[in-house]
Image 1 (cartoon, helix red, strand yellow):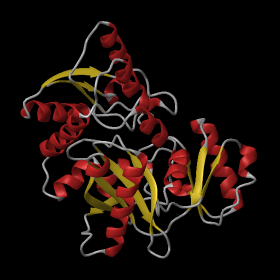
Image 2 (spheres, one colour):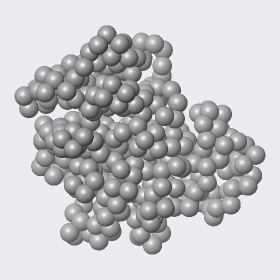
Image 3 (cartoon, helix red, strand yellow):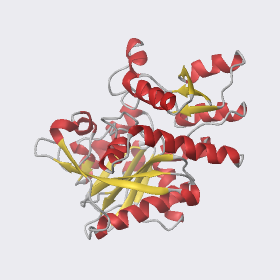
Length: 330
């Protein structure tokens, strides 16, 4: 197949004056190179397209591809991850990973939790706050946890995100509202184990690849998988890969993750973040249907490596899942 690649390259945005944090979700050149080399090794032709505006230019010029390998995150708006898939749908060009509905929904953590809860999947109690006045009415037990409703990679999360009193709720909530100019998700803080579950496939064919447990070192910001902890993970975080056959809590986390993946309609590959409550009961936190794919640093490839799955096999499985959907016209 002739496969186009859509992505947001971090270095391009640096050149435009954007900061490290603003571009935290975007890709490094070596990620694009690794994906391209894997696709070529699988016998495909590749064509680098780039970000959504580059795609618009290419589509307007009449370009077309058999498939687009899409990892573009977008820069603006809560629906930013849905922009590339929506354009490709308009031109009837198939692509990897989830559709615009799923990507728009999943970026809004509050909307995602409503759908997940309606499906009977456990998730901590929460509210979505739109302005400072609403902070006064939040009625959840302390401690709480606060984060921007539509960011990833730990953006907006630090040690202060765990909120233990009303004054902190007002201070942190106000800061997040002003800084990110979007609603704030406030949920009950879960003190238990934190894992991320890798999944590949679509619908009934979706399968758990494996689970990574996140353990914070003494040098880390305490109790939260924050932006700084993620950026400096080599020094601050230890990753383990527990077996569900030997760990009932992990087994339950994987069951919840797969149920959430299927309930949300996610496709091809991605991750689900799970954290346990004070009784060791895993609960859904959020979904990443456009998971990072840096071969040595991103969670999904690391989970695959721990399970003896090569990066090329991961890319192959993603293409297989997309091809199966294409054959069914999905």
